[in-house]
Length: 267
Picture: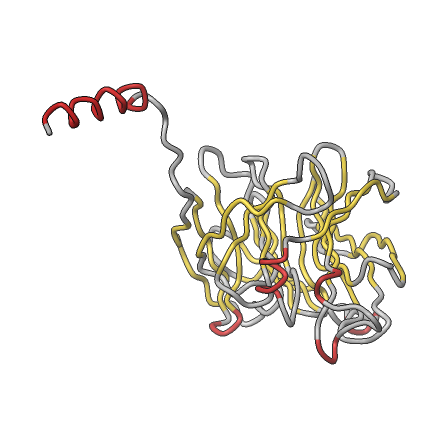
């Protein structure tokens, strides 16, 4: 028996100096009551932007107080899905959900003035309904949703949900589908939010689950690689990374049932 234990110890010796990859976890830092927290949140150095169908509300990160609101209802904006701040501009995914056929556009705002300064229309995009966008390595990445049940497009369902890469002029370059296990979790809704983390991984959400799905682009083929599922203080929907915080990964999300914006740290 002693010899067997000794042999096992010798076998384990080479492994003792090997780094062990710890599982990621999310720790909630704060929860901010915001009545407009229904669809998504975006963030930059000094402010966070709460997105609710046809409105965007700019809040101070320092005091959590409302600074300004943009209302697009009079301009026909009915369903903003998410937003991301890049170089002083807020880019919001906009759709005609739940109408069929699906139509989408990207609406652009100046974060200082909160004025609408541009738009890119996808029209009736073959990929589905635009739910989120982000930039990485000189490309645009966009999530396009398909739904189940009465919200499904003719002949399509949640399985048609995809990630599409475009160049900076919105010319399509390539696309991927989501793994079957995530499609099952999305159903009957779809992929609602997403963004690239500082670790090079893609983080996505469903419509209402308190989870983040960590993904990678595949080395071959057409299906995104599901790396991990992380419990998080969110209820699906649009998420945003605060890339202005150095030394840690800070995520903004929402809880619709509590009308709350959550701020969390990913470890």
